[in-house]
Image 1 (cartoon, rainbow, N blue to C red):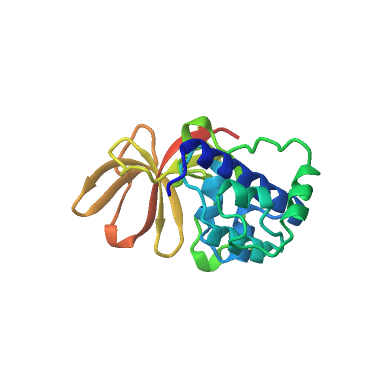
Image 2 (image 1 turned 90 degrees about the vertical axis):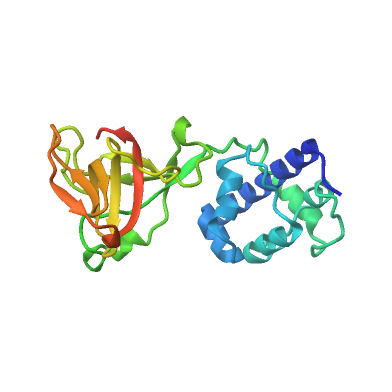
Length: 235
């Protein structure tokens, strides 16, 4: 039987409190927990970053989180899901007490992933930087956007307006159009931030000068990833 919306909301809030507790104790982020539980990172991140999303995890998913973290599913979570006694190892009361011991559960600031992008080919990029997971607060415009990410400007293309290292936010929620500032990553892992002038059969016409002049054309076959830069934070 389908749960009422109020029941879904309560169950989801309890699940988020439990996951917050796990992250606090393990000193993990959401991606760490997803890896330990053998789940897609989006399964954890959409719960933490977008509490209004209708997604409520199944008991099977919660059991994977419990097995991966070593923290049993709290009894009150199972009750809220209408699944008490279905799964679990009998330590739910202890888990409830652990969550209560944290006091008032903090409100989680929505975040987006801070990706490492570089103007260098992947073979020359730092493996330490590229492999480190990090998150930054999500601007209000990007809350709930599961495609959004942040990055640091990889070069001085738009100097003096935006210097290398300036924080930027991008989204993949729509296709780019002429006039958009985009971040294009080629198949060698090299990223560039450019103003899109036009989309033709030959590829993307880009510029890195203001006023705009056609500087380069990137073939569609050479593009590994593309996103639209929506917010610039001057350093």
